[in-house]
Image (tube, rainbow, N blue to C red; front, side, top):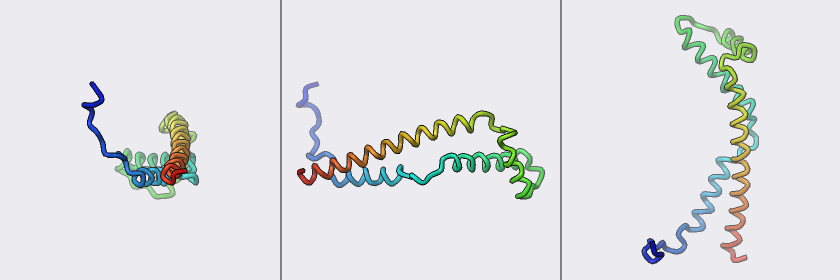
Length: 119
């Protein structure tokens, strides 16, 4: 296909301000440096265990103390098998990649700002 038949886009195709806004939004949504992944995932599995335990035994009523006791023995009982450990490794890798991506976005924003200023 010859280049002359390709659609032409107005210049600039993406307004620089819009591009910078996208970079800022991405940085804000991905850069959560104070998140403790292990604590967050442990909390997730504890809550999931509580909910599943209640659903699977819906004919009974459990006190909060009883449910807390059940979650204390999660490590010994391993109700989810090896899934929590595998998920933790995958989520950790994903967050590392996301933080690296955010750092790249910050560099991209700096470059875009310098280009806009004509430096």
